[in-house]
Image 1: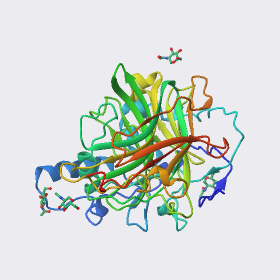
Image 2 (image 1 turned 135 degrees about the horizontal axis):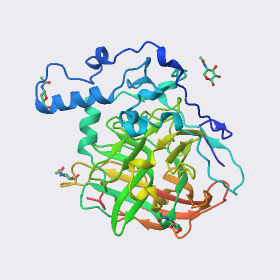
Image 3 (image 1 turned 90 degrees about the vertical axis):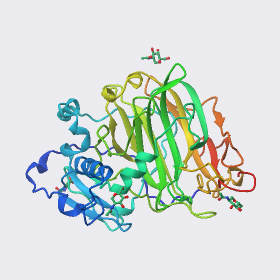
Image 4 (image 1 turned 60 degrees about the vertical axis):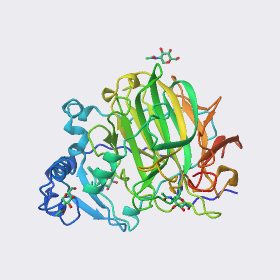
Length: 402
Ligand SMILES: *[C@@H]1O[C@H](CO)[C@@H](O)[C@H](O)[C@H]1NC(C)=O
Ligand SMILES: *[C@@H]1O[C@H](CO)[C@@H](O)[C@H](O)[C@H]1NC(C)=O
Ligand SMILES: *[C@@H]1O[C@H](CO)[C@@H](O)[C@H](O)[C@H]1NC(C)=O
Ligand SMILES: *[C@@H]1O[C@H](CO)[C@@H](O)[C@H](O)[C@H]1NC(C)=O
């Protein structure tokens, strides 16, 4: 028996680029900064000056702003003023953005769950011609800065742990359904459930595009994306720097997903698809029924061609694994052997090939170097509901994981 607490709607690609509201009065976010902690008044420390300068660059003028029940601020920013278009080479192409070609699938046309976010739970929405952007705060910047990402194979840092399934080959994308949980997070840790689309050159990770949900600071799962073009030396979350072009008017990167799954209760899941549009070569993202936006091809080096690894699963980042193991949970916080309704899953694991066709994974490998802390197992079920799947996660610190 399947439960879903999300709306089931048939997949409709709604994609409109509107440049109509050009003459709408724009409110500067300046007045709001100090009130909302996105600027620290009177702090002359060098670090804070840098952060304030960065915030002024990232947080764009808006036509409307919405306060989410979790106190996040969502700014409705005119489409053409979003961070990506700070890059001149992208700004030149605004008028050329086209609807991407969705991958072909031979699977039975199913239903797809729409993701729901907390900020529009009271019916608030952004006006046509704008996109919702979570306002970045000073604490967001310091947290993201200290939590650099690494790939599995570049794992020189002891700060990362993974429990994943992966396939290797030549791919143009990935698709899977992730269920969403609210794991416990210790202090400044991160816990993620995600899809990685990776491109290795030889043994080295060169480029990645990633999407899923993550929990940090306040224990709410948030929609997130990430990309790097230089093997994780630098990289970018959400719209916190220029790169990703958001096209949806409905969803906000970095904002909380709600409702979420409950242990032995209702399960909430959402599909994530990342694929390379055959016409433009840009990498697009669809979450649930909604096309969210794209990473322009020009951001990348090796991802101008194929992805070479697709990975699905969990990642925990901890600032401090030196003493006891962190108590930060992965997935639901329960081990995969607890199974459906208790452990986190990612199911209908699929890849997209060079012909823009969606195919179930084959030869899925598993990776869980510390299975007593976080583990993964795989299986195969009814192709319409489960297909190839993994269960993964764990509690972190316990008598077998110190
Ligand atoms: C200013 O920022 C520094 C560095 O982040 C911090 O240690 C200090 O407490 C801050 N001072 C005030 C008055 O907020
Ligand atoms: C916004 O756009 C949608 C779709 O084009 C349209 O149905 C709706 O009426 C528009 N709303 C406003 C307020 O213009
Ligand atoms: C991508 O993979 C396909 C299939 O293996 C191959 O024919 C093609 O040359 C690859 N493209 C690039 C740019 O490496
Ligand atoms: C590690 O955990 C043990 C048992 O829970 C506890 O007694 C000890 O104080 C912890 N050590 C540190 C450094 O937190």
